[in-house]
Amino acid sequence: MSLLVELDPPQTDTGARPQVSAQDWGCKVAYLSKDYPSALQHLQAALVIWPEMIEAHQTLSGTYRALGEKDKAIEELRTVLRIKQQNPTAD
Image: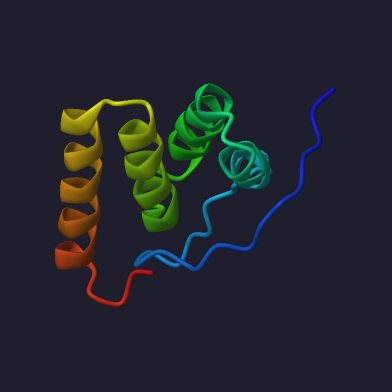
């Protein structure tokens, strides 16, 4: 059973609001429980819905680091930098 909760992400430059599911919440629970494979699945699903979600990329970096995947962790941090450079007000 999957619990779905809609979050209210900030509007994009075009004024559209991407719809994000509770993958973010599932990820937080999994990450804090150190269930990194589950957190990884939740994060990847959330990023399909909202690819520019900085918090998800940051958490994904930490998840990859915890799983020993240093190169992927670094790549996620580079993604965060790219997003912030393109949109300095992004959180």
